Amino acid sequence: MPGFAPSSRGDVPNAVGNASFELVVLPHLDAAYNLARWLMRDPAAAEDVLQEAMVRALTYFASFKGVNPRAWLLQIVRNTAYGSMALNRGVETVPIAEESDEAGAVELVSGDDNPEIALLRARECRQVRALIAALPVELRETLVLREFEEFSYKEIAEATQTPIGTVMSRLWRARQMLAQAAAAEGLV
Amino acid sequence: MSDLTPCDKVLLVQAELDGELDAAQAAALEAHRTDCPICRASQAELMRARGLMRGDLYEPMPDDVRTRVMARLRQVAPPPAPAPRRRRNWDWLRGPSIGFGLGAACAAAISLLVVLPERNDLIDQVVAGHIRALQPGHLEDVVSTDQHTVKPWFDGRIDFAPPVRDFAAEGFPLRGGRLDYLGGRPVAALVYQRDKHIIDLYVWPASGAGPHLAGDTTIQGYNVVHWAAGRMNFWAVSDVERGQLDDFAALWKKAP
Image 1 (cartoon, each protein chain N blue to C red):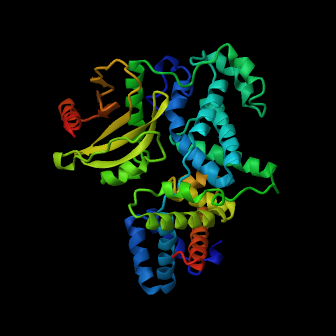
Image 2: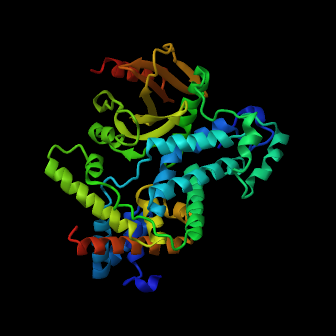
Image 3: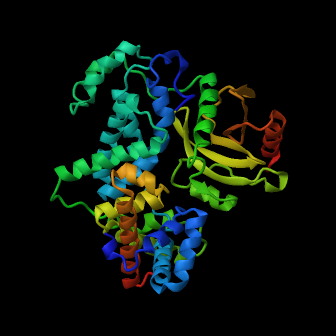
Protein backbone atom coordinates (compact mmCIF):
# COMPACT_ATOMS: atom_id res chain seq x y z
CA MET A 1 0.00 0.00 0.00
CA PRO A 2 2.17 2.80 -1.19
CA GLY A 3 1.73 6.08 0.52
CA PHE A 4 0.75 4.68 3.90
CA ALA A 5 3.94 3.34 5.35
CA PRO A 6 5.91 6.11 6.98
CA SER A 7 8.85 6.91 4.77
CA SER A 8 11.23 6.81 7.70
CA ARG A 9 11.17 3.06 7.42
CA GLY A 10 11.71 2.88 3.72
CA ASP A 11 14.50 0.39 4.18
CA VAL A 12 11.97 -2.26 5.09
CA PRO A 13 9.26 -1.88 2.47
CA ASN A 14 6.68 -3.93 4.28
CA ALA A 15 7.41 -2.63 7.73
CA VAL A 16 4.37 -0.75 8.80
CA GLY A 17 3.58 0.66 12.18
CA ASN A 18 0.46 0.61 14.26
CA ALA A 19 -0.81 3.78 12.71
CA SER A 20 -0.96 1.92 9.42
CA PHE A 21 -2.70 -1.08 10.94
CA GLU A 22 -5.23 1.37 12.20
CA LEU A 23 -5.60 2.94 8.78
CA VAL A 24 -5.45 -0.16 6.66
CA VAL A 25 -7.07 -2.92 8.67
CA LEU A 26 -9.33 -1.39 11.32
CA PRO A 27 -11.76 0.16 8.83
CA HIS A 28 -12.78 -3.43 8.09
CA LEU A 29 -13.48 -4.35 11.70
CA ASP A 30 -17.25 -4.24 11.14
CA ALA A 31 -16.98 -6.53 8.14
CA ALA A 32 -14.86 -8.89 10.23
CA TYR A 33 -17.50 -8.97 12.95
CA ASN A 34 -20.30 -9.51 10.45
CA LEU A 35 -18.51 -12.47 8.90
CA ALA A 36 -17.61 -13.96 12.28
CA ARG A 37 -21.21 -13.58 13.38
CA TRP A 38 -22.62 -15.27 10.31
CA LEU A 39 -20.07 -18.08 10.40
CA MET A 40 -20.37 -18.81 14.12
CA ARG A 41 -24.09 -17.94 14.43
CA ASP A 42 -23.59 -17.17 18.09
CA PRO A 43 -22.61 -13.75 19.48
CA ALA A 44 -20.18 -15.00 22.12
CA ALA A 45 -18.45 -17.42 19.76
CA ALA A 46 -18.29 -14.69 17.13
CA GLU A 47 -16.59 -12.30 19.55
CA ASP A 48 -14.03 -14.94 20.50
CA VAL A 49 -13.25 -15.52 16.84
CA LEU A 50 -13.08 -11.79 16.16
CA GLN A 51 -10.71 -11.22 19.09
CA GLU A 52 -8.38 -13.98 18.01
CA ALA A 53 -8.54 -12.99 14.34
CA MET A 54 -7.73 -9.35 15.08
CA VAL A 55 -4.74 -10.32 17.21
CA ARG A 56 -3.54 -12.57 14.40
CA ALA A 57 -4.06 -9.78 11.89
CA LEU A 58 -2.04 -7.38 14.01
CA THR A 59 0.68 -9.99 14.40
CA TYR A 60 0.88 -10.85 10.72
CA PHE A 61 0.34 -7.31 9.51
CA ALA A 62 4.05 -6.69 8.99
CA SER A 63 4.03 -9.36 6.30
CA PHE A 64 0.87 -8.14 4.59
CA LYS A 65 1.85 -7.25 1.03
CA GLY A 66 -1.48 -7.27 -0.70
CA VAL A 67 -3.65 -4.48 -1.94
CA ASN A 68 -6.93 -5.74 -0.53
CA PRO A 69 -6.82 -5.54 3.26
CA ARG A 70 -10.49 -6.39 3.61
CA ALA A 71 -10.13 -9.69 1.75
CA TRP A 72 -6.96 -10.37 3.73
CA LEU A 73 -8.65 -9.69 7.07
CA LEU A 74 -11.75 -11.70 6.21
CA GLN A 75 -9.58 -14.63 5.19
CA ILE A 76 -8.02 -14.53 8.66
CA VAL A 77 -11.46 -14.31 10.27
CA ARG A 78 -12.66 -17.21 8.19
CA ASN A 79 -9.67 -19.41 9.00
CA THR A 80 -9.97 -18.55 12.68
CA ALA A 81 -13.67 -19.40 12.61
CA TYR A 82 -13.00 -22.74 10.95
CA GLY A 83 -10.34 -23.48 13.53
CA SER A 84 -12.78 -22.68 16.28
CA MET A 85 -15.51 -24.81 14.71
CA ALA A 86 -13.10 -27.73 14.46
CA LEU A 87 -12.27 -27.35 18.15
CA ASN A 88 -15.90 -27.14 19.13
CA ARG A 89 -17.19 -29.78 16.82
CA GLY A 90 -20.35 -31.19 18.24
CA VAL A 91 -21.11 -28.16 20.37
CA GLU A 92 -24.43 -26.72 19.35
CA THR A 93 -24.52 -23.02 18.68
CA VAL A 94 -27.62 -20.92 18.73
CA PRO A 95 -28.86 -20.11 15.25
CA ILE A 96 -28.56 -16.45 14.50
CA ALA A 97 -32.25 -15.66 14.40
CA GLU A 98 -33.48 -17.34 17.52
CA GLU A 99 -32.06 -14.95 20.04
CA SER A 100 -33.02 -11.75 18.28
CA ASP A 101 -36.16 -10.41 19.84
CA GLU A 102 -38.96 -8.78 17.94
CA ALA A 103 -38.33 -5.31 19.34
CA GLY A 104 -34.70 -5.30 18.34
CA ALA A 105 -35.56 -6.55 14.90
CA VAL A 106 -38.13 -3.81 14.42
CA GLU A 107 -35.52 -1.24 15.28
CA LEU A 108 -33.29 -2.56 12.51
CA VAL A 109 -35.82 -1.92 9.82
CA SER A 110 -37.17 1.32 11.24
CA GLY A 111 -37.80 4.22 8.97
CA ASP A 112 -41.25 2.94 8.22
CA ASP A 113 -44.12 4.96 9.58
CA ASN A 114 -46.54 2.09 9.67
CA PRO A 115 -45.78 -0.13 12.68
CA GLU A 116 -47.67 -3.06 11.18
CA ILE A 117 -45.61 -3.03 8.02
CA ALA A 118 -42.48 -2.53 10.09
CA LEU A 119 -43.38 -5.57 12.16
CA LEU A 120 -44.08 -7.58 9.06
CA ARG A 121 -40.75 -6.62 7.53
CA ALA A 122 -38.99 -7.41 10.77
CA ARG A 123 -40.55 -10.85 10.80
CA GLU A 124 -39.59 -11.42 7.19
CA CYS A 125 -36.08 -10.26 7.96
CA ARG A 126 -35.87 -12.74 10.83
CA GLN A 127 -37.13 -15.56 8.67
CA VAL A 128 -34.56 -14.82 5.99
CA ARG A 129 -31.86 -14.69 8.66
CA ALA A 130 -32.87 -18.10 9.92
CA LEU A 131 -32.84 -19.51 6.39
CA ILE A 132 -29.37 -18.17 5.71
CA ALA A 133 -28.16 -19.38 9.09
CA ALA A 134 -29.44 -22.84 8.25
CA LEU A 135 -27.31 -23.11 5.10
CA PRO A 136 -24.23 -25.33 5.27
CA VAL A 137 -21.28 -23.24 6.38
CA GLU A 138 -19.39 -23.34 3.06
CA LEU A 139 -22.48 -22.11 1.21
CA ARG A 140 -23.22 -19.55 3.91
CA GLU A 141 -19.77 -17.99 3.83
CA THR A 142 -19.82 -17.75 0.05
CA LEU A 143 -23.21 -16.06 0.12
CA VAL A 144 -22.23 -13.65 2.92
CA LEU A 145 -19.02 -12.60 1.17
CA ARG A 146 -20.87 -12.04 -2.09
CA GLU A 147 -24.04 -10.34 -0.84
CA PHE A 148 -22.83 -8.42 2.20
CA GLU A 149 -19.24 -7.67 1.26
CA GLU A 150 -19.90 -7.60 -2.48
CA PHE A 151 -16.75 -9.56 -3.07
CA SER A 152 -15.97 -10.58 -6.64
CA TYR A 153 -15.75 -14.28 -7.39
CA LYS A 154 -11.98 -13.93 -7.40
CA GLU A 155 -11.95 -12.29 -3.99
CA ILE A 156 -14.21 -14.99 -2.57
CA ALA A 157 -11.95 -17.64 -4.08
CA GLU A 158 -8.95 -16.06 -2.37
CA ALA A 159 -10.63 -15.49 0.98
CA THR A 160 -11.97 -19.04 1.12
CA GLN A 161 -9.00 -20.69 -0.60
CA THR A 162 -11.37 -22.34 -3.05
CA PRO A 163 -11.29 -22.59 -6.87
CA ILE A 164 -13.50 -20.04 -8.65
CA GLY A 165 -15.61 -22.79 -10.23
CA THR A 166 -16.44 -24.11 -6.78
CA VAL A 167 -17.25 -20.60 -5.58
CA MET A 168 -19.71 -20.23 -8.45
CA SER A 169 -21.47 -23.52 -7.83
CA ARG A 170 -21.60 -22.91 -4.07
CA LEU A 171 -23.11 -19.52 -4.61
CA TRP A 172 -25.64 -21.00 -7.00
CA ARG A 173 -26.61 -23.73 -4.57
CA ALA A 174 -26.81 -21.27 -1.69
CA ARG A 175 -29.19 -19.04 -3.61
CA GLN A 176 -31.21 -21.95 -4.88
CA MET A 177 -31.63 -23.38 -1.38
CA LEU A 178 -32.49 -19.96 -0.02
CA ALA A 179 -35.10 -19.25 -2.71
CA GLN A 180 -36.68 -22.68 -2.37
CA ALA A 181 -36.76 -22.63 1.43
CA ALA A 182 -38.27 -19.15 1.34
CA ALA A 183 -40.89 -20.31 -1.14
CA ALA A 184 -41.72 -23.22 1.13
CA GLU A 185 -42.32 -20.76 3.97
CA GLY A 186 -44.42 -18.57 1.76
CA LEU A 187 -41.85 -15.79 1.80
CA VAL A 188 -41.52 -15.25 -1.91
CA MET B 1 -20.80 -29.73 -8.79
CA SER B 2 -21.99 -28.80 -12.24
CA ASP B 3 -23.79 -32.12 -12.44
CA LEU B 4 -26.22 -30.66 -9.94
CA THR B 5 -27.07 -27.79 -12.22
CA PRO B 6 -29.76 -28.48 -14.80
CA CYS B 7 -28.05 -26.59 -17.64
CA ASP B 8 -24.34 -25.96 -17.80
CA LYS B 9 -24.98 -22.30 -18.56
CA VAL B 10 -26.84 -21.46 -15.35
CA LEU B 11 -23.62 -20.49 -13.61
CA LEU B 12 -23.09 -17.96 -16.39
CA VAL B 13 -26.59 -16.62 -15.80
CA GLN B 14 -25.59 -16.11 -12.21
CA ALA B 15 -22.25 -14.60 -13.19
CA GLU B 16 -24.08 -12.04 -15.28
CA LEU B 17 -26.29 -11.07 -12.35
CA ASP B 18 -23.16 -10.69 -10.24
CA GLY B 19 -21.54 -8.44 -12.82
CA GLU B 20 -18.82 -10.94 -13.64
CA LEU B 21 -19.34 -11.18 -17.41
CA ASP B 22 -17.89 -8.89 -20.01
CA ALA B 23 -20.03 -7.58 -22.86
CA ALA B 24 -19.12 -10.36 -25.31
CA GLN B 25 -19.84 -13.10 -22.78
CA ALA B 26 -23.11 -11.45 -21.84
CA ALA B 27 -24.17 -11.25 -25.49
CA ALA B 28 -23.37 -14.94 -26.04
CA LEU B 29 -25.35 -15.82 -22.94
CA GLU B 30 -28.29 -13.75 -24.07
CA ALA B 31 -28.44 -15.73 -27.32
CA HIS B 32 -28.49 -18.98 -25.39
CA ARG B 33 -30.99 -17.84 -22.80
CA THR B 34 -33.58 -16.97 -25.42
CA ASP B 35 -33.80 -20.68 -26.26
CA CYS B 36 -33.27 -22.15 -22.79
CA PRO B 37 -36.25 -22.24 -20.42
CA ILE B 38 -34.02 -23.71 -17.70
CA CYS B 39 -31.77 -20.67 -17.73
CA ARG B 40 -34.71 -18.29 -17.72
CA ALA B 41 -36.26 -20.07 -14.74
CA SER B 42 -32.92 -20.15 -13.02
CA GLN B 43 -32.48 -16.45 -13.52
CA ALA B 44 -35.87 -15.78 -11.94
CA GLU B 45 -34.94 -17.93 -8.96
CA LEU B 46 -31.56 -16.27 -8.52
CA MET B 47 -33.21 -12.88 -8.58
CA ARG B 48 -35.71 -14.00 -5.94
CA ALA B 49 -32.84 -15.13 -3.74
CA ARG B 50 -31.10 -11.82 -4.17
CA GLY B 51 -34.32 -9.97 -3.47
CA LEU B 52 -34.65 -11.83 -0.18
CA MET B 53 -31.33 -10.43 0.95
CA ARG B 54 -32.24 -6.84 0.29
CA GLY B 55 -33.26 -6.33 3.91
CA ASP B 56 -30.90 -5.26 6.61
CA LEU B 57 -29.14 -8.51 7.41
CA TYR B 58 -25.72 -7.12 8.21
CA GLU B 59 -24.76 -7.88 11.79
CA PRO B 60 -23.77 -4.60 13.42
CA MET B 61 -20.99 -4.87 15.95
CA PRO B 62 -22.14 -3.95 19.47
CA ASP B 63 -20.16 -1.11 21.04
CA ASP B 64 -18.99 -3.25 23.93
CA VAL B 65 -17.51 -5.81 21.53
CA ARG B 66 -15.69 -3.02 19.72
CA THR B 67 -14.37 -1.69 22.99
CA ARG B 68 -13.09 -5.10 24.08
CA VAL B 69 -11.45 -5.79 20.72
CA MET B 70 -9.70 -2.42 20.76
CA ALA B 71 -8.54 -2.98 24.33
CA ARG B 72 -7.13 -6.37 23.39
CA LEU B 73 -5.31 -4.92 20.40
CA ARG B 74 -3.85 -2.17 22.52
CA GLN B 75 -2.62 -4.82 24.89
CA VAL B 76 -0.75 -6.75 22.23
CA ALA B 77 0.33 -3.81 20.10
CA PRO B 78 4.07 -3.61 19.54
CA PRO B 79 5.93 -0.32 20.00
CA PRO B 80 4.93 2.26 17.43
CA ALA B 81 8.25 2.76 15.68
CA PRO B 82 10.19 -0.48 15.78
CA ALA B 83 13.70 -0.33 14.45
CA PRO B 84 14.25 -2.95 11.76
CA ARG B 85 16.07 -5.29 14.12
CA ARG B 86 13.22 -5.05 16.54
CA ARG B 87 11.00 -6.82 14.11
CA ARG B 88 12.97 -9.96 14.67
CA ASN B 89 12.15 -9.67 18.32
CA TRP B 90 8.55 -10.23 17.76
CA ASP B 91 8.75 -12.89 15.14
CA TRP B 92 8.36 -15.35 17.97
CA LEU B 93 4.97 -13.88 18.63
CA ARG B 94 3.72 -15.36 15.42
CA GLY B 95 3.50 -18.83 16.83
CA PRO B 96 0.41 -20.28 18.39
CA SER B 97 1.44 -18.92 21.77
CA ILE B 98 0.09 -15.48 20.97
CA GLY B 99 -1.35 -13.88 23.98
CA PHE B 100 0.59 -15.65 26.64
CA GLY B 101 2.83 -13.34 28.55
CA LEU B 102 2.40 -10.77 25.89
CA GLY B 103 1.00 -8.20 28.22
CA ALA B 104 4.07 -8.47 30.38
CA ALA B 105 6.44 -8.45 27.43
CA CYS B 106 4.99 -5.33 25.99
CA ALA B 107 3.79 -3.60 29.11
CA ALA B 108 6.76 -1.31 29.30
CA ALA B 109 6.63 -0.34 25.70
CA ILE B 110 2.93 -0.28 25.04
CA SER B 111 1.84 2.20 22.50
CA LEU B 112 -1.75 3.17 22.36
CA LEU B 113 -3.06 1.86 19.13
CA VAL B 114 -5.66 4.51 19.19
CA VAL B 115 -4.46 7.85 20.37
CA LEU B 116 -6.04 11.17 19.87
CA PRO B 117 -4.03 12.29 16.92
CA GLU B 118 -2.28 15.57 16.61
CA ARG B 119 -3.90 17.85 14.12
CA ASN B 120 -1.33 17.19 11.41
CA ASP B 121 -1.65 13.53 12.07
CA LEU B 122 -5.37 13.78 11.55
CA ILE B 123 -4.98 15.59 8.24
CA ASP B 124 -2.63 12.83 7.11
CA GLN B 125 -5.21 10.27 8.13
CA VAL B 126 -7.95 12.11 6.27
CA VAL B 127 -5.87 12.15 3.11
CA ALA B 128 -4.73 8.55 3.54
CA GLY B 129 -8.34 7.49 4.10
CA HIS B 130 -9.35 9.25 0.92
CA ILE B 131 -6.57 7.64 -1.11
CA ARG B 132 -7.42 4.24 0.28
CA ALA B 133 -11.07 4.72 -0.59
CA LEU B 134 -10.20 5.51 -4.18
CA GLN B 135 -8.94 1.99 -4.66
CA PRO B 136 -11.39 -0.20 -6.55
CA GLY B 137 -14.28 -1.43 -4.48
CA HIS B 138 -13.56 0.70 -1.44
CA LEU B 139 -15.32 3.92 -2.21
CA GLU B 140 -18.82 3.26 -0.99
CA ASP B 141 -20.43 0.77 1.32
CA VAL B 142 -23.83 2.12 0.40
CA VAL B 143 -24.29 3.33 -3.15
CA SER B 144 -27.12 5.78 -3.58
CA THR B 145 -27.70 9.26 -4.82
CA ASP B 146 -30.61 9.54 -2.42
CA GLN B 147 -29.77 11.17 0.89
CA HIS B 148 -32.78 9.42 2.43
CA THR B 149 -31.16 6.09 1.62
CA VAL B 150 -27.67 7.01 2.68
CA LYS B 151 -28.59 8.60 6.00
CA PRO B 152 -30.51 5.62 7.48
CA TRP B 153 -27.77 3.29 6.27
CA PHE B 154 -25.57 4.70 9.01
CA ASP B 155 -28.14 3.80 11.70
CA GLY B 156 -26.80 1.04 13.85
CA ARG B 157 -23.40 1.18 12.19
CA ILE B 158 -22.22 4.28 13.92
CA ASP B 159 -23.04 5.95 17.22
CA PHE B 160 -24.26 9.22 15.77
CA ALA B 161 -26.51 10.38 12.94
CA PRO B 162 -24.45 12.27 10.39
CA PRO B 163 -26.16 14.98 8.35
CA VAL B 164 -26.47 13.87 4.73
CA ARG B 165 -27.23 16.24 1.88
CA ASP B 166 -27.27 15.98 -1.86
CA PHE B 167 -25.97 18.92 -3.86
CA ALA B 168 -26.63 17.51 -7.32
CA ALA B 169 -28.31 20.74 -8.39
CA GLU B 170 -25.18 22.64 -7.47
CA GLY B 171 -22.92 20.21 -9.33
CA PHE B 172 -21.88 18.03 -6.38
CA PRO B 173 -24.08 14.91 -6.62
CA LEU B 174 -24.06 12.49 -3.72
CA ARG B 175 -22.75 9.04 -4.68
CA GLY B 176 -23.01 7.13 -1.46
CA GLY B 177 -21.38 6.66 1.89
CA ARG B 178 -19.19 4.33 3.89
CA LEU B 179 -17.79 3.84 7.32
CA ASP B 180 -14.23 4.85 7.90
CA TYR B 181 -11.93 5.00 10.86
CA LEU B 182 -10.15 8.21 11.74
CA GLY B 183 -8.51 9.53 14.84
CA GLY B 184 -9.37 6.42 16.77
CA ARG B 185 -13.07 6.40 16.10
CA PRO B 186 -15.50 5.28 13.42
CA VAL B 187 -16.60 8.17 11.25
CA ALA B 188 -19.14 8.65 8.49
CA ALA B 189 -17.70 9.23 5.05
CA LEU B 190 -20.01 10.77 2.45
CA VAL B 191 -18.91 10.40 -1.14
CA TYR B 192 -19.59 13.14 -3.67
CA GLN B 193 -18.69 13.56 -7.28
CA ARG B 194 -17.54 16.70 -9.02
CA ASP B 195 -17.16 15.99 -12.72
CA LYS B 196 -14.56 13.21 -12.74
CA HIS B 197 -13.32 13.96 -9.24
CA ILE B 198 -14.33 12.30 -6.02
CA ILE B 199 -14.86 14.30 -2.85
CA ASP B 200 -14.86 12.52 0.47
CA LEU B 201 -16.57 14.29 3.33
CA TYR B 202 -15.74 12.87 6.74
CA VAL B 203 -18.20 13.68 9.52
CA TRP B 204 -18.08 12.92 13.21
CA PRO B 205 -19.23 14.59 16.41
CA ALA B 206 -16.99 17.31 17.80
CA SER B 207 -15.70 16.18 21.17
CA GLY B 208 -16.02 18.87 23.77
CA ALA B 209 -14.82 22.38 23.18
CA GLY B 210 -11.66 21.51 21.36
CA PRO B 211 -9.81 24.19 19.47
CA HIS B 212 -11.36 24.98 16.15
CA LEU B 213 -8.73 24.20 13.61
CA ALA B 214 -8.23 26.01 10.42
CA GLY B 215 -7.71 22.89 8.38
CA ASP B 216 -7.35 24.22 4.86
CA THR B 217 -4.26 22.72 3.39
CA THR B 218 -2.86 20.66 0.55
CA ILE B 219 -1.15 17.32 1.02
CA GLN B 220 0.21 15.11 -1.75
CA GLY B 221 -1.85 17.06 -4.24
CA TYR B 222 -5.08 16.63 -2.30
CA ASN B 223 -6.90 19.64 -0.97
CA VAL B 224 -8.32 19.44 2.51
CA VAL B 225 -10.93 21.75 4.03
CA HIS B 226 -12.06 21.54 7.60
CA TRP B 227 -14.91 23.19 9.41
CA ALA B 228 -17.17 22.56 12.36
CA ALA B 229 -20.91 23.12 12.48
CA GLY B 230 -23.78 21.87 14.56
CA ARG B 231 -21.43 20.07 16.96
CA MET B 232 -20.00 18.04 14.09
CA ASN B 233 -16.53 18.01 12.61
CA PHE B 234 -16.35 18.12 8.84
CA TRP B 235 -13.29 17.29 6.75
CA ALA B 236 -13.58 17.44 3.00
CA VAL B 237 -10.77 16.02 0.88
CA SER B 238 -10.43 15.80 -2.87
CA ASP B 239 -8.18 16.41 -5.83
CA VAL B 240 -10.59 19.02 -7.22
CA GLU B 241 -9.31 22.56 -7.37
CA ARG B 242 -9.15 24.40 -4.12
CA GLY B 243 -11.81 26.88 -5.29
CA GLN B 244 -14.30 24.12 -6.04
CA LEU B 245 -13.69 22.43 -2.73
CA ASP B 246 -14.26 25.76 -1.03
CA ASP B 247 -17.54 26.09 -2.96
CA PHE B 248 -18.53 22.66 -1.72
CA ALA B 249 -17.72 23.62 1.86
CA ALA B 250 -19.67 26.86 1.45
CA LEU B 251 -22.76 24.91 0.34
CA TRP B 252 -22.54 22.81 3.45
CA LYS B 253 -21.98 25.75 5.75
CA LYS B 254 -25.04 27.61 4.51
CA ALA B 255 -27.26 24.52 4.35
CA PRO B 256 -30.08 24.70 6.90
